[in-house]
Image 1: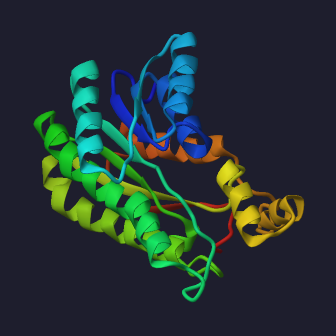
Image 2 (image 1 turned 30 degrees about the horizontal axis):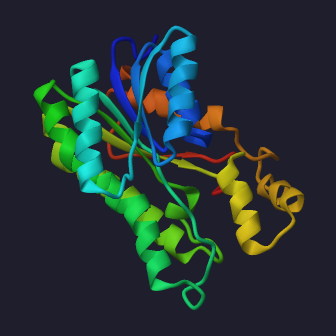
Length: 252
């Protein structure tokens, strides 16, 4: 029970890596607030956790809205008495070059992928500090550490997340708050399939190509979740400002 009695918030918690991590957190003893724009999806994950004997609440929210983020933090504190762990996981991707990308698409990718992390940290850090510290894990990407084709706004946004993580770790380490990023490679999620659709590629061929890495396959959400659990837990007590790559050797 690596997270026994911890109080956690997971954004983008209705599916993919977020869902897997929320379930993993609960399995390790945490109380979990599942946050997603898809309110019904968040409810489903919370009900799944509760049915398994865990403690969870679902919160429908737009993570790019400060009003919604304030409500999320307040609801988690009201329900659980505080916040010890945050997984800033909500994210979107638009596969396009600078020429193809619209200004509106650029702004929306940054609103969901970057602004949301800033807003959550702005409002949750005081709560964590008052409770003696905590752990924040931000979802970066392999493409936050290297470039990728036809994904300008996503690469730029995830690069921002990785370096924001370092800055947050420096600012809030003295308050006992650790901040790290987990950086997945291609993972078996609906988001990956949506990329194939955006690019007009055959989904089967696209997913097969995602496995072109030393381990010979794409990742599974539970494998990313296991890394997030470690970063959230006291097992990583001397780790902060780190960019943990979980990509089957893709960057290597």
